[in-house]
Length: 216
Image (cartoon, rainbow, N blue to C red; front, side):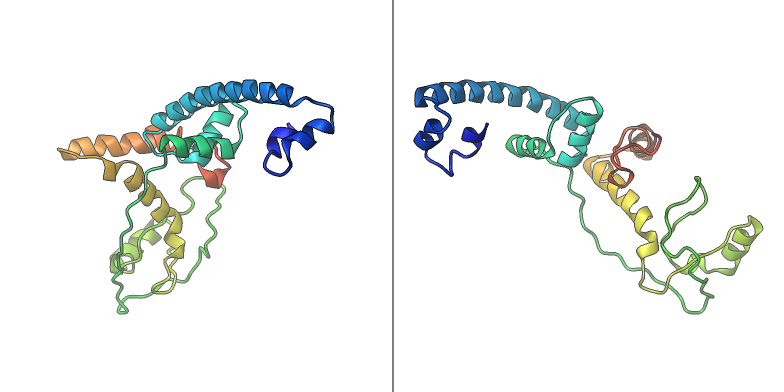
């Protein structure tokens, strides 16, 4: 309502006189409307908490909003973000790390065939990996040729062709591995597999895909 949305801009008396509304009538309406909105916020907050918990705390407000919309819930993103802040809910933060790649100039360097073109027509058309001496080794390159695969490299220090792969592993670490305390290798293997096949591919909403799952 105009009066409620502009109460900080104009005096209540003037806004009431223009449409011929009494001040007591406005305050009575505002009180009822506030109670109804508070009740609606409580109901929505419960749905938000459930969606956040279902993602094991991996979703921030954009993906929680997309999840609710996918369920048929008509709600604004800003409202979801506001309620999540109020409840102290946020996506898991990834730990930042520094790593260096050791490459050798003694081995041949392949041309940059990929050119950062990550959109492919079907799975298994492009595979990505950290650039290192092992990928330039003669036996490795011979194995690629034996399987009809072409090698593509960027210049030293340019890691942008690895960005999608690094993004996946960073997501997996932040959403699963860093929050776990594995007692055995078998536990880690099961948890990682569950994240990839049970959540990442089938349920996780990906912003790069317009908030749908890879298997959608």
